Structures are given as C-alpha cells and as structure tokens.
Image (cartoon, rainbow, N blue to C red; front, side, top):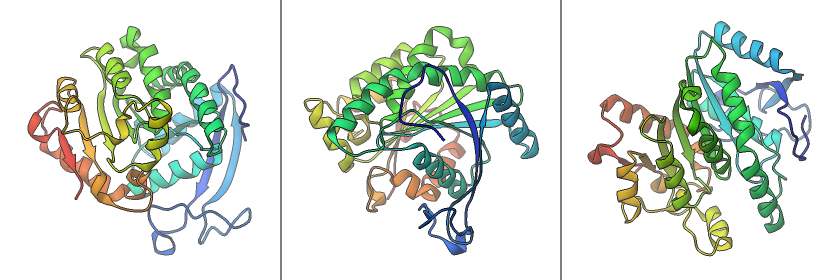
Amino acid sequence: MFSREASNELAFGQVTISIPSDGSRTVGEIQWPISPPGDPRKDFVTTSADYLDRAAFEKAVTTVARSKHRSKAMIFIHGFNNRFDDAVYRYAQFVQDGGLPVIPVLFSWPSQGAANLGSYEHDRKVAMQSGVSLALLLDVVTLNLSVNEITLVCHSMGCLVTLDALRVKAPRRGTMSKLKNVAMVAPDVAFDEFINVVEGMGSRRPRIGLFLSQDDVALKIPKSISGGTNRVGDINPEEEPYRSAIARQKILVFDLTHLGGDDSHSRAFDAINTVMGMLERRLAQGQQLGEDKSRTVSAK
C-alpha cells in the first residue's frame, strides 16, 4: 500500500487480517502465505486493505471503539528493516496472541526493509525525521472522543521515532492527557539520549516501561557503529550508572534475557503470553513504578 519513500504528509489506511486459530498455528509466530492470497486456515491473510482520508480514519477508530466496546488505543511503531506488510502482520500477531482489548493503530515509517549497513544508516535518518508525524498522529487519536487512553508500543529503531515524538509533545503537556503508557521493546537508542528525553518531559509524563535483553545480538551492530555507545535494549539494569538513573526517573524495567528463543531482539513479541503475564502480575501489585523493590522484573 505504501512505498519506502518518505512523505511530507500523513497517509491513512485500514487493513483487516485473518489469523488462523491457535490450534492451527504456532503462537508467537507469523504464518506467512507461501503465495498470495494464502489459506486462512493456516496462514495470515489480508482480507481487506483500503486507503482512508483523515476523516475516514477518525470514523474507523470510532467504529472499532463502539463495535468492540473498547476505549483504549494502542499505537505500535515498528523498527529497522520492517516494511509496511511486516509491521502490519507483526502487530496483528502481537494483538492476537496477547489478547489485547485495544483499538490497534499502526504508525509505519518508511524503512527500506533491508538488513545492511547502508539501509541501517538510511533508516536511522528517516526515523529521526519521523517523530513529528507520530506526534501528529497522537493528536488525531487524542482528539477522538471514543478514546479515553493511549499506549505507545515501539520496537527497536521505532523507539527513536517515539522519543522524538515525546520530545516534540513535552512542551505541550495538555496534548498528552490521554497518553498513559509508553512501552519500549529492545530500544535501539543511546541510554544517555533516552534518559535526557525522559527527564525533559518532567514529572507529569506517561508511565514508561523498558523491555530489554542483555543478550540482544541485533543491537551489537548499532552499538559498534556509534562507537560503543550502549543501547537501552541490552543494558544490565542492575549495573551503574543505569540502576540509579532508572530509579531516579521511576522507569519500570522488564529483563527478558532468560526467556530464551532464537530471536533475542523480538522475544517480547514471540513470548507475548509470558510478557503479558509479567505485566499483569506487576500491575496487580499496585505499587508505584519507582519503588525499588519491584523496579526490575526478570523473566525466568
């Protein structure tokens, strides 16, 4: 539906995905069709895909909210080497396997969808220019009267887009009234940059959660490119200076290192049932995010 070229304007669309029953698929994985359109009994299948203008998009959000009796929107921002179709299917898998009762909204920025050094550098530049557009999307969803709460979920380089959007929104705190949670999965962001943005948002900011893996191989390349600058997604949260900075900013950390699996960079999505269980247990405790005794949660 959308090319890999950047645009000066937001474009909107609506995609419906058919997902096989859990008994016919491996939970945590995307069952790509061998050839289009695919078999809905065993494959993820796109059943409809339409372009929308802004008014039609707002109406679509309202329709989902009312028909599904939902008032919480979740905006997903994909990472490096993700085409639009990759992001749509990954988000569909994430929502389905997590049983998330949300209005799912995808923010797709024009990644080249290629895993090489040149594409990484290109994607990083584009990601750094996409925060303003994400901030605009946040405004659109915030103004929808059917939405009472918004959660941002970003992955890898998508967290760079998210941080820039939060930086843009920070001076206008009133426009973030519905943004309650920001979940950063395997963030490909320098730790100092992350902390500076969070600190600059002040105390009246959304709750921020980090999902990291100390064995995240995918983050070794950007770390090397940046001259050894540590990425948020593979730090040891119990080591200094990370421990003190995290505690000072009251950030909740989920260490997924021990979950295992072949893809350490995406294990939060692959093991979504386990991750959701961790979140539910944490929320059930009813403690403040800054309480030291439960600040870091490990999956073992």
